[in-house]
Image (cartoon, rainbow, N blue to C red; front, side, top):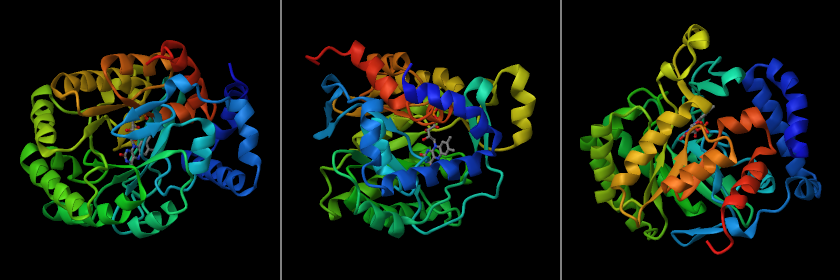
Length: 355
Ligand SMILES: Cc1cc2nc3c(=O)[nH]c(=O)nc-3n(C[C@H](O)[C@H](O)[C@H](O)COP(=O)(O)O)c2cc1C
């Protein structure tokens, strides 16, 4: 086990004694300090090791050092990009960014269940707003693929959702390498209804128009989907996305299904209240959704697999299924900053240099 992984295991009980949001705030402040002190990040390199060249891949003309990315929601405001790069991520999806700033839901809104590697969140798109995030992205580091994930403001009625996505798209898209349309967070009332084919079609067509107006046709567009979809619904949604001319799908977001929690802990999690669950127990559900999507997705379109990935073996099985890229979030909270390098190392053992 790497030094960073074992150091984090020692330190984790202390960190986890804090409430999740203050712990997150502390980790972010430490990250910002490390980024600000010249030379600090180069100290990480010998600890994380380099990324094996066999992991490099080209997707839609973008060069990824590794197919492993950080999922949306952890660095909503693109504040720690240099840190993610130093830890070995091949790419980072920032956001979800809303057009206008909004505070998100009241606290508490984030809970962890370490015994099961699960997180429950109802953050509700706390966002500094697209203008501030776009400004920050202008100083993004080289050599790291950055995706932008956008959503709508809570106060915006569903019928006007396209306007919100357009505002955020116009500000964020010019600063990033790919864009993701988030219509699958369970924490913005009504957002998931945008996944219904009859509302999804005009939304995606509208965003295609905006992309054309901005001459960004070559920049890939992804739709991020929920895991809580019956196969028939999912098939219909996939068909709309394929017909829309988008480049791919990110699957999945968090689940509303409390059945992924063991019976032993179910009452505790239910007492936490509303929100989406992520982490280890999401893997089975997310994998079923990913496989179903892959059955219908033409080869020229790509799937980013997300949901419960926490090891090289998980990463490999998602790629064996046909995912082009991978994203993690919850496992990083439980295993710490050494995890991306560890997954890269494990994944490299499975990839032959010729691929
Ligand atoms: C605290 C928290 C906040 C999240 N915020 C967002 C978000 O703003 N936008 C989004 O698309 N996904 C968000 N997600 C979902 C993750 O990007 C990911 O889809 C989900 O957690 C499943 O991956 P995992 O099991 O590796 O965590 C969030 C997840 C967590 C745990």
